[in-house]
Image 1 (tube, one colour):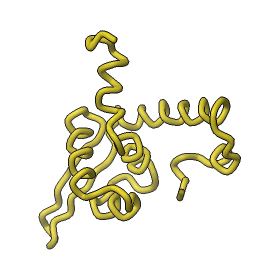
Image 2: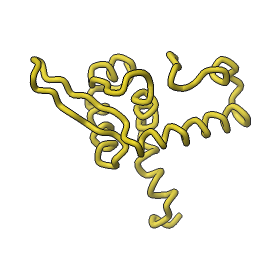
Image 3: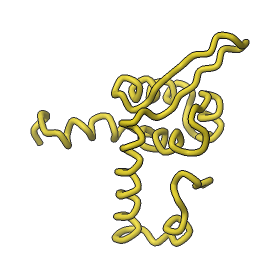
Length: 118
C-alpha cells in the first residue's frame, strides 16, 4: 500500500494499541476526564502507554489537554476535540458493521457506546 494513501496514514495512528479505546472512553460521561480516571477505567493499560497514546491523540488533534495547577496534586485532564467527537461516529459504524457481520453480542447491540460499562 502506498504510504501517501489516506487510509494508510489514518490507520498508522489509529491502529496503535489502545488508541481507539481511549477515544471511546473519553467519549463517555462528563466532558473532561482526569488521567487517573482514564487509568482506573482502563485497568489493563500501563501509565506509560496511556501517557504516550494521549500525547499522540493530542498531537493528532483528536484530544485536548489541560493542566490545573491550582490543586495539589495537579490535575491533568483530557477531552475530545470536535475532530475526536466525529471519530466516535466512525467507531460506532465499525461496531455496527462488526455486529452485523462478525460478532454476535446482543447486549452490545442494544447499548450506546457512551453508556457502556464493559
